[in-house]
Image (cartoon, rainbow, N blue to C red; front, side, top):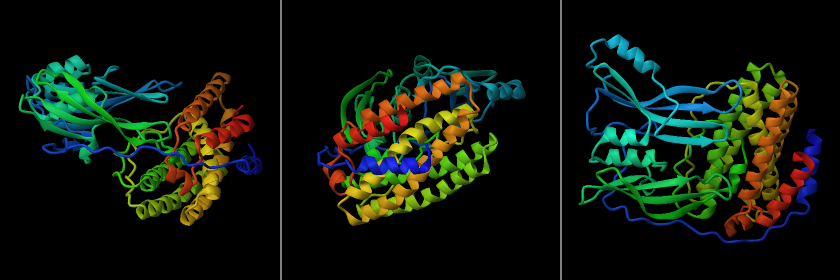
Length: 442
């Protein structure tokens, strides 16, 4: 896709765009009396505060990444946080430490998957000369024994697929009950992309380790602005934005993604250099990162104006990827999501009623169009270096990404996002997607 053709396509597509307001629900409220935040370390639940049935010398939370792409089946383990002294009572401390360092697993008491990578969480323990991996839910229950601390209730909830915020009680908190059990406030889902939701779940955890949902409620609707910007691999879900007005949440989420895109482009530049890409592509990736700095500033100012503070992006430090993995990510994040996001930014620049929003989106739209052009240039460069089976996998991934976008844009945005921020209605969004699908993604 040549640059002039992409811009021409955007201009032609936008001539037919319209906007109509539709209403979305707001935030929920929960009684927080008696609840406290779980203990966390570096963004993960801490393993301090546990009271196991047979206390070990040492316990550590770890995860292992498993990739479903050629050349890199799995990586790990990653040591997240720990408690106690490793091999403290071992008769052969050096052998114990070597076994602990090498300890990994293909299982996990929690398995979380996104795109082509899955993450398995497990506990590593030492007791005397024994080094063990606790990597099943039943094994975790047996290790913890009676659930008699708030941190054990939090960990058990996490192990069953629920998220707990470390600093937002409405999205992560624990309260001891009179019957010896606990209530835990958790969430599931994320707010990146229309069609996604964050749902709050209040759980009861019994002393025997039974976890039951007592209530659930959607507390945040997906933000279509997440289609703007290239999401870096390893981006952790944000805790969300305090429930102010819709425009504040929207631009705070956009600023979070724009800030994350800085790291995505810096990493892309390293990977392009690793695989011998032309300096022009490397320089364009660096220039894109610098432009994302400005986008972050613009979006942050809008978020502050509407009463919200963007969360800082947290991106896991992961190794540089193979050429196929880079191309696969580029096909999804660049040629699909970023290209659509650039078109949406142009739509906002034309249709937003708010003058400051129009001005910000006009600048962002021009830059994002260049970023989309870079994605297609990388796609052409990589295709010549990939096998036919890898090129087929890229086409399939792009088709899946387009289908996911189609599902996301079917959810109506809040009326203020349509009128003040210029976001397209589902009907208009479907038309924009259809134009790109016919001209680019066929």
